[in-house]
Image 1 (cartoon, one colour):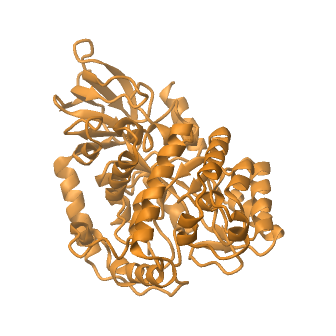
Image 2: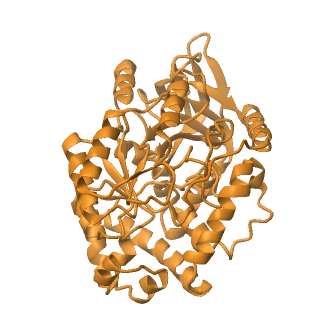
Image 3: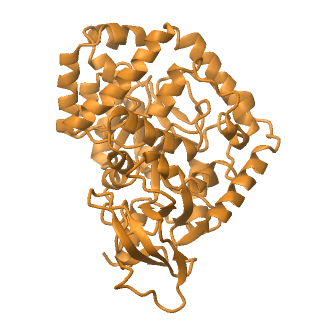
Length: 479
């Protein structure tokens, strides 16, 4: 596709191209290109980019970079598309005060060149997108929801209260008018409000995604056209022999374990596959949540990248609420449920349910922008996916979900130049996605030395004292 047309399509979809047009042409030579569509790895290739797009991909023997091109010798290296984290929160009331010096560059330093922000402060998000597009701010491209639709008394910041169907329709209309890319649903929205929001979103042609609300069945959400389900919300309730009771009464992880019915699960999985309802299980967050008292994070080296607000306010709130209100089942039961989530991932994947990688960063306890996406990919492999299939959840699949396979998600001519250069083959070991030699973000290249300087700057920014923040509602569950 002609690069100007591709750029126009992406801008029309609200996807920002950071720094496009602000970098010279460059070429990776003698590199192995990882074909995320499922083809064989392509050794000894040259990939040429210019003005934020890939302009040529061919064997190094057949392709000579034009004069003046910046050459990146890449023999023994591996080139993959830029990664996407499809469930993040970047600025989220006083839980995640805006900190563009930490959150945004952490993504880039880890090869995450695109994010789907699943609920945040809309004015800040729009400001960031504009600054990133203009090359004034370093960060990933963003698709955003703004405030989340929740119940009459939301339990999170960055939320819009819904008490009636009229509220739901009005809020969807307002958010659409303000230019959000999709509508995010939270757990406490009333049943009639949920279906009103779903109907209004359909009328406006804007996707609606998020939680399966407490008062709605996962099967109903899928049939209503919800495009993605986060954290497996509603899935294990739908696989329970007492689903009717769980819809109208309190939910319990232990009850989900005890009343799990394989046949009901199979029927629900088949429905998700038939409706192509995307799943973003956020396995890294789920594991951290349910096993918060079983995972020792006291010596986590990544803590140096956590701002004071996270360590002093957000993380303690989460731990307290998790331990008091959620993780009340015995540890063996919670371990069993974490394994059940891995088993459900594999069962759904084998049935043809589409998946994307998402982490619920950054408000979760020790869930870090960028770093945790690599852990999410490793958990997909632990569940039974191949390294290629796991890699697709953060590259090709987000492009499919966003309707932009022609423009992004793979290393091919005409695609946007978001690329990650690795020291080792990710198809042999998914953990090799962490072995980053360089990141090309919309034509701007950061080599290993630049990435290390970036991380050092983030560490310095994270150590700075946080300004006072207004108090908000207390956390209760996944976002």
